[in-house]
Image 1 (cartoon, rainbow, N blue to C red):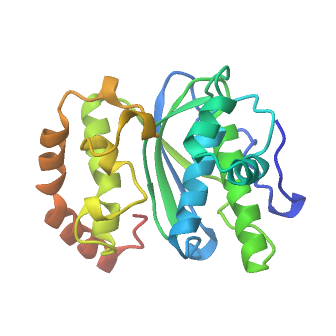
Image 2 (cartoon, rainbow, N blue to C red):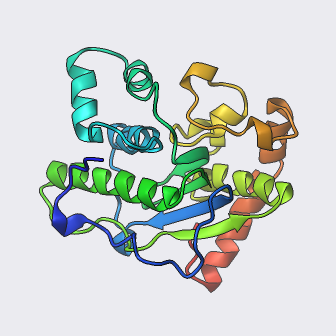
Length: 240
């Protein structure tokens, strides 16, 4: 796989992890920028990483994301249609189940489908965005902390509450008043406001409740989670 990055921004994600990521398991993945640096400054930058995540979930790609995105733009094809053409016969290394992109960090729920799939996916996606961001802002050096955090999702109940925590992140941080107002998460997919052909995430097999019930499940907790986060901030440096 070609990766269009400079050596000075490549992250050391291929090292042996304390808790190896197991193929077939689902994980909550968290990655923060260095010193909580703001890594998204406009909608286009959020969508750049969102598109890179869609792209790098597939393995053995014949082209790097930056060149693919440029070609798709030049040919005036919709990104999604062009991507489907490219990956028609490709296998996924990970399944994206949920996500939320925040100004200084990202949350992902991923299922590993191939050995080292998550590590490769995160490395490729974040390195690609780092290269784009550094060129855009004429800066050098790493953008992300060196190693992402991961937590095994071991039960349906844990999964459900984790998606709520992730989808309420923008509300908790007071970026928006309602999770539906945040464009850069999978929440709208979960409440049925995104058509099948435009969905990034695959979660139906893990959900036992419908879109409306899920929406109620989220909103009933909205104010409480925000209040809890404010209390925690008075005591510790919270990672939300």
